[in-house]
Amino acid sequence: TQLLEQSPQFLSIQEGENLTVYCNSSSVFSSLQWYRQEPGEGPVLLVTVVTGGEVKKLKRLTFQFGDARKDSSLHITAAQTGDTGLYLCAVLNQAGTALIFGKGTTLSVSS
Amino acid sequence: EPEVTQTPSHQVTQMGQEVILRCVPISNHLYFYWYRQILGQKVEFLVSFYNNEISEKSEIFDDQFSVERPDGSNFTLKIRSTKLEDSAMYFCADSYRPNTEAFFGQGTRLTVV
Image (cartoon, rainbow over all chains, first blue to last red):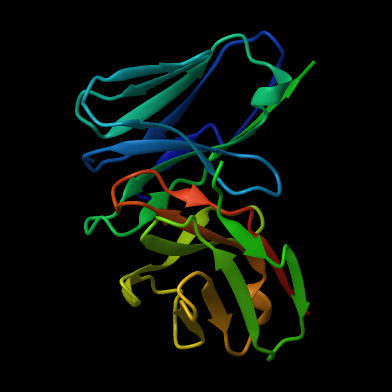
């Protein structure tokens, strides 16, 4: 059983479309991070959400942390080809010494 | 902008050989990590390192693996006797404090043949 379940696993859309990807768990977290990884690169942090119900915006990206702090979503408005990549959610382990990643959603945006 | 740098970018080695993957963390960061990503699979935690000792390690990090900070700047991951299943991207990461943003290097692609 995965600690973090991400869905969908793959998403292929046209430029200009909106999309939402999800990160779900049965566990409660003090915080959750979203990373984006491009092919041949390491993950890059997009945002950290901390408070239940929190919404953070990063240009066309909107991140939400569930009220119960068990799940999170990432919504992209008017997707661009540059949004193509692997979107990963991650949480700290109980000791706070390591990040635990979900399997990620691979997003492909075509023009 | 400061960044984590890893060398080599790609390493091919024969099964049973030792490899050393190198990382230069960001200068004022104190917490160091190794992760790996097998092709098509998720990023997996290997080990965390602070104050010249291992803070935590995963089940993957068995006796074949070791880490050290030999000269106060480089942070290395050694795999003593590589196996085919060690083939993966290995990422070094660091952070200023443990609960803050982790900065990842570009990775070393290890191919064991």
